[in-house]
Amino acid sequence: MKFGGSVITQKKKEFAFRPGVTARLARELAFSKAEVILVHGAGSFAHPLVHRYTPPFKPEEITEIQRGVGRLNALVLSALIRAGLSPVPIPPSAVVRCGRGRIDRMDLGPFLDYRSLDMMPVTFGDLCLSSTNGVEVCSGDQLASYLSTRLGAEAVIFVTDVDGILSPSGPIDEMGIEDLASIPVQEVQGDVTGGMGKKIEVIRSIAAHGIPCAVINGLVPDRLLQALGGHIIGTLIRGEYAKKKS
Image (cartoon, rainbow, N blue to C red; front, top):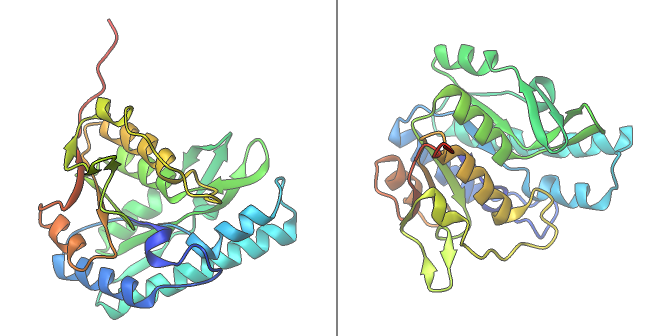
């Protein structure tokens, strides 16, 4: 599951956490009793900082950005704990190595080990060591894709601030992999992780592994709880194995 940074923070204002929304999402997650690995975006705790600096980042800039995402992660963990869950943080900077905008490798051991203890692994968008540029941005969407496809997720729910994947006529209820290529996307200025256009690419790669995805609006009460119960009010992307070329 991915809590988008646009849901748990106000992206246009630095360090603007949404405590009420996050607490409600945590309660819905706890009530569902679903077994999940949770990824959350960095939102306004990192995007403005990353946008302000120019790679390669200086050591003090790396520290400032990672401190920001750590602050947000602590707030998310507190909301989950108050909801009665048992989360454990797994910082990507400690387990991920990137290169040229993608995850090269990731230590999945901590995720599996904590799940075996009935705990909820929580990871988040971060700066990670890079084989090409010192450090680079590793987005929550990248993490959701890597974890879900390698750990055999049943489904991936993207909790966003919109009512699903939108067409000119409104939200699309259900679609297949091939349909994603025809969706026109309006990007959000200043979104350093690629916005909805990049998210659609990530969703396509996940669905190509046979894993269905859902895009729902987490700002609307009970949408997450309903999705966890199998009722998607948003967009369902069918999990379809990619067709092999003959």
